[in-house]
Image 1: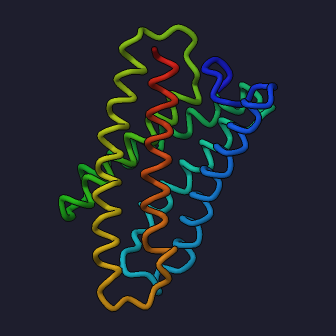
Image 2 (image 1 turned 45 degrees about the vertical axis):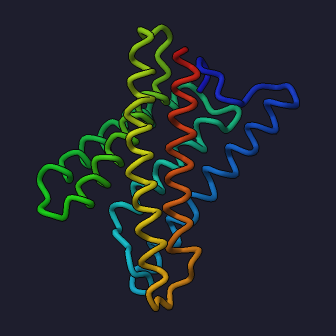
Length: 188
C-alpha cells in the first residue's frame, strides 16, 4: 500500500520482503484457482469460498506489487467493498451449516479489509486499523479451524491430492495473518 509501505520499497530488505509477499499471495491464489478447476475431485470444495480466497490473493499481490498506480488500487478497493457486501449477504441469507456461515463471514471481513487496505486512508484514527487487524485475527481463527478440519477429513480414505485439500486452508490462514499484521503495524 502506498501510504502504509507494505514492503514494496527500494532497499534490498524491502525488495526481498516484497518478493516473499508476492510469492505467498500469488501461490495462495493459484491453489484456490486449481480448486475451482477441480471441484469433483476434491472432498471439500465450495466454489464461492475458493473464489473469494483467490480474489483476495490477487488483491494482496496487486497491493504489494511495485509500480501499481493509486487509481488502480482505489478502483480495486471499490470492487472489494462490493464483494464484501455480497459475501456478507451470502452469510446472512444462505441457509447453511454454521461452519459455512463463519467461513463466509470471514471472507466478507477479509474482502472488507482488502477494500480498506487498497483504499489506503492517509490519516485514519488509530483504532480503525487496529480494529481491522483484530477482525482479521478472528478470521484467522476461523481459517485455522478449517485447516484442522480439512486435515482430519483428508486422512479418511480420500483420493484427492493433499496439496489441494490442506494447502488452500493453510494459504488462507497465512494470508489472513499477514493481512492482520500489515494493517496492525500500519496502525501502530
